[in-house]
Length: 412
Image 1 (tube, one colour):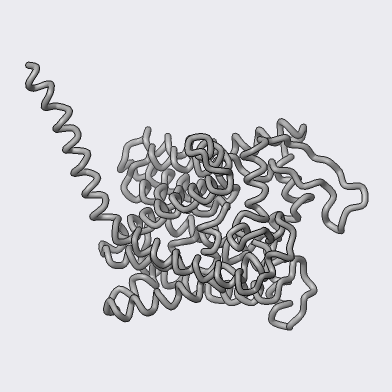
Image 2 (cartoon, one colour; image 1 turned 30 degrees about the vertical axis):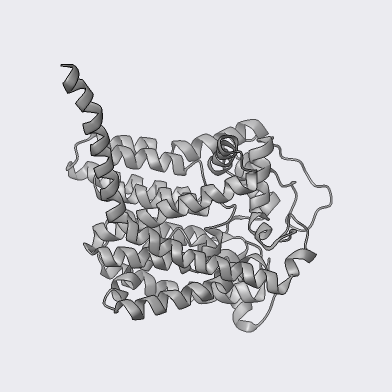
């Protein structure tokens, strides 16, 4: 009996080693492809910042800093560090004679708690400062996102090469500069990709739990919640997975988002407190696409008569918006599962239908990774040297269009 007991831990350890080896074999190529391309783009971004030196002339909170790498912790990154350091103090404080459209002071409650919470925990465990902790969380999350994108694409197409390419495309996508920054984008995409994968593989409870967690990360989780809920509803109708598991996914999915928004409303004394904060302090709200239309019209006519006008980022945003119909058609031709289609379309509608900084469309659409799937499938027939050249060139260029343009020529 003692001999058998001594063998059990060894067998368990061996099983875990084999499982870990299998995960490395499966996801390693996609993660490495993503990491190499992202590192190239990030390096170019830092070099461009160093060459320009403009960051040194800006306030540390608004795109500046003592070093080039400080830039990726400004704007929203500054707010996340404030939440991680001081926590929340939700309040709706009126501004007597503020700028047009801004009638309430900005407050950290506009930023959801998951990412700054992980920053604080990582800082406490590792001893890193909040900047280093935030970057570590974002980089690790981006690797999980690359693995999740690979898993979704492999499941949809049955082709591992397409999955690796899709992860690589996400590394160089417009807006990808926010992936390695003190921003919550990578964390959200990691959660969204794995939630979609769980739906595709009928792991309904896991999908609901992951979506619940995503709801604590960003308000854009509403698109994911809707997609998971719709897929679960269809599954309930078909009765292919029983009743309890899809129903659990439907009930769990919105709890994170509703819980945080409700808490902010309770603390501010207005049940719509979070939305008022977004509307009156950040001028960010759903306007049925009027802001997007005015911005596109202004860009096409060479004018700057719309809110938050930044010429170069806005030009890229216009090109991205004009390319969306083609990308949507190419995605639909692949006949993706309902959860991917619904999630992608809901993300696009929420981005284009909301007033905000138009130049950030590239970043706001970063979670819509299914748009890249058709491109990845089309590129899978390229030879390795050609593929490496295409993606490598894109990685170098992304240091400018996905990094420098967003953080220095606009407001991320």
